[in-house]
Length: 399
Image 1 (cartoon, rainbow, N blue to C red):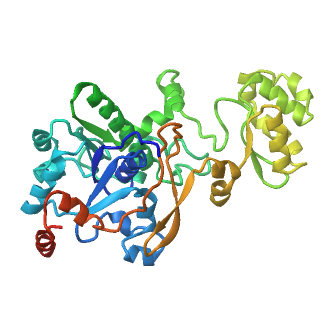
Image 2: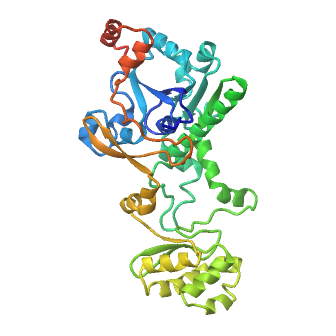
Image 3: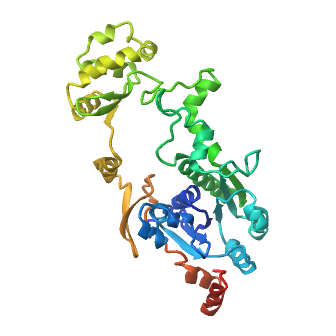
């Protein structure tokens, strides 16, 4: 069996809900031993989040199942003196710690980065928050939708009829989680060369804004305010969503030769010489006149026909699938984007695996999301605690 990239790396995961768990999920899929440190009462809030009430009651909500494969779970009350002492023991040989509390929480508990770095100077400590550890808004509460609104993302989404418009999934949380995972990997690489641990400050607001690179560049460099264009792409025309005989199609004719191929496939050669559409910039200005001409021809045949015909001429085009159709399409199945894992008391569930495919050190889903405190005996036993000592700590609410 291939050795995984992060095999031998120990991660303490003090995160909740999505951004942090998404970070540590990727580290776990790459082979790190991720120990999820949860409060003894009910653990990660995501355990109670999901559309299936029965699973929420079992503390295995769908939101939790989606983000926590390959992890170990221990319970620990880090507010208690005994809990703090146990936590410090865990930190001694940890490589990475990830938390997504509000800034200052870990410091007030006496287990912030400075205190832990005295125990383990090689520790990589990643703190994820809505606004970062510093600045005028650092202590404000934040969820994904709040960040979507403050980032400008909602303002540039939609069209003149529907704006502002939220993205239909928690894009800020997940992008923040990926940014944190990237940062941890970079810090591990630096430590490999220098032996130094360090503190990483990741803000969801910071993380999402660079994704609007071209839109922001048009404003910052070109002085052009974003224009609400709905499903049209401002970089080219025809580039967007168009009606067909039985639905819609996405077409992205971003190059001149692709535009000419569209005219050929749709049997509209006269558009090539129409002065309104001959050049890229004039097509963009006249897209309001161009779209009805294209849709009149597209309406004569179904989407599937046009997708095949356009792709055959190297014009990027595709169906607009429902989520169910998207998850089941042959390409996604071929790439094994989804993997099945059996979960005790739940049954077999499908979860996303690692979507970067390594030929020598592949990541994989090897274990189901853990029950709350499932690995207490294993982890605390390794610290030298007897069964009796663990039972006593459990009776006190420490673990």
